[in-house]
Length: 395
Image 1: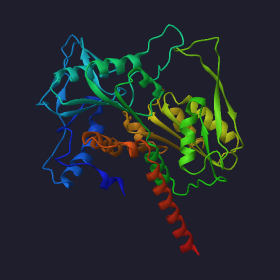
Image 2 (image 1 turned 135 degrees about the vertical axis):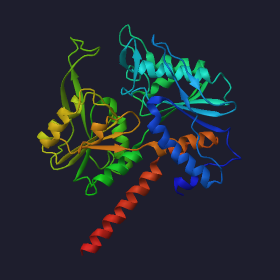
Image 3 (image 1 turned 90 degrees about the vertical axis):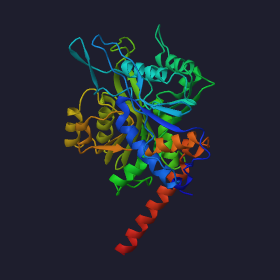
Image 4 (image 1 turned 90 degrees about the horizontal axis):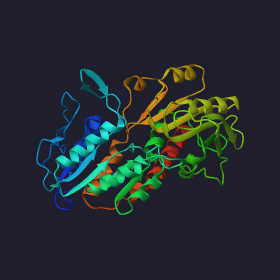
């Protein structure tokens, strides 16, 4: 049964009236999510035009701020949507324009939860990019911001946190009795990959999945498994990062080189998946490495494609043929310039979030959302039939 017909929208079996509270940095994503929810609600016979609860976090000239919710939320099932990675927003501070940092977005989230004043039936937080998520373990005398953030939200009455592709999902151990769901947009990525590159073959002789490091191995093994090219019939490769542990640069030991482990990639299309493309240096190093080993094409996916060092090096790599496609989701802010690059492919995950919110609001199982294996199988079967049809027409 198609997922579209499994949506649980009805006026009778909802936990409580639904309210979407989009923070300023997540407005675009929230409106896309809401469009799906409204369409499903109308299909179920509900007279509804919006689920969005208007809000703001105005600032005083001194920089102080407050949260303001502009309509009643009493008895609502609230979903606060926040993008802590949206660096495009600014605010006035003593006559200067300050860009909002992850700290600012997180503080605004807490302000709006406070503004609800405990009147909501339930409070849920959709935070695709986890605040402090990259600092997932303690090596020295270091803070554990993400773990503490989750504990703080739990103390504020939050029942569920929804995130995507957490850097280390074990951070949920900090809040073992609070709902924490870590979704992986694997289906959405593959659907976009096959749509934009219809000639891509996932046969063993044509295709290979390579993990960018040991930390991303499970993520890439899952892609291999659902494609039917798991370890039994595909030679997976992996890079490991050789670091200089005698120095610390920007809080971490610098990478000296990416060393490749695995069988040859010659003549094959290579696909690499990771949770984040930050500066992008690692992606470019890997692309150069596999192309030097005579790989045919190189594709990379990062759930959060933020490109902190700009796009110039990727433009050059594309012109030189080192990269053929870089994929990133709309789960965090994407620079308009990035969206216009010929080598970048945006993966829309708004419908996936809408499915989750609908299921949770109707107290329904989310098992099929956490493991979209059936949808991926259907996608692959459809693609195989289309290829067979093309071959028959050519004959």
